[in-house]
Amino acid sequence: MTLDKSVTLDKSVPQIGEHALWDAGFDGKGVKFAVLDTGIDPNHSDYQAAIKEEKNFTVDPDFFTKNS
Figure 1 (cartoon, rainbow, N blue to C red):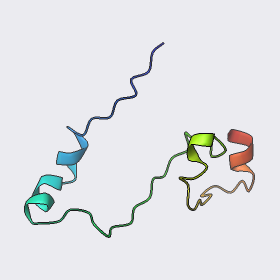
Figure 2 (tube, rainbow, N blue to C red):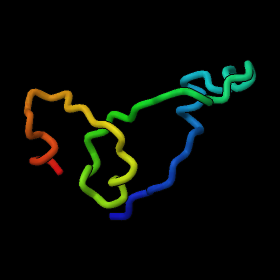
Figure 3 (cartoon, one colour):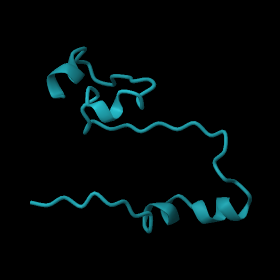
């Protein structure tokens, strides 16, 4: 199985009305955002300098350790 690792915004951008925001002058500067994702290994070397904060939204205090 080969996974497609490319990202396209052709569906998500129109869903959130991004073009109207761009046209109104909003460019995202100064905006903070979060990505809620259970599909990464937080100990992977690619993420060591990238993850600034994490929050466990489960009732399992050891969720990250067991599922990484």
